[in-house]
Image (cartoon, rainbow, N blue to C red; front, side, top):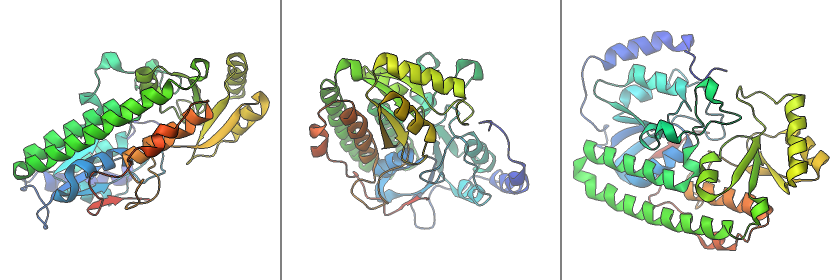
Length: 335
């Protein structure tokens, strides 16, 4: 599926709501006085929750466990966009249908904030097997690098403070707490990476989510099962991966907790590599309100999963505080 195609089924509703949106700029804040914020994938939703807390109402449009690249928003999501005071998206072509819906329906003066393009420059984009440069779309999974997640939080805090200056100190305090936690996570990633044998610091995953992490922390992504068109790989592509795993003696390969992959099972069987099938990229552990339903819980679970399987000592991660800075009482995660 093209990441930038339009959705005719939404045209009538989008036009009507778009016309209403252009009729004037409403003051920020819903009926409860809180800013109305719309987000896309759950890592972004959670970062916004941790900065905004109970001063904002957050609606995460993309359901957890859904392929965000091919997700088609429902017609009812147009109303959420029309009611929003701000919309935060990842950008870098991750969620183009949702971006199009937002831009067609937000009120005059309401920003659709592209976090990715404010975090990396085009010179820092990564193109690879699933996101080839000739297709024009860089790999968009910036949040798997905790340092980029901190930049997301900084943009969110600055945006919310501009919209709601009365709560600027609240947002700043949450950003400080979030950044401190990121500093600790960054330290632990480097500490535990050092315990993984250097020849094992190689990732073969189902979905191509970790290249920015790999670049920052000295890992190598040797491949991803899911190709650029999000179909299954060809027999020739599978054969090449099998040869590569054998040649590089990769001890473990990683499937998605959301998308089971018979192809990875086949590769593991033919190479003798361990197949670990519970890696996540944007599906937070547990449910809203659970202690580990957080960006920190997501990334710590992933790091424990692949660093442990590749020979690292993941004990330090188990003492890391994965709880949210702010609870999700005013945040909606769809499932």
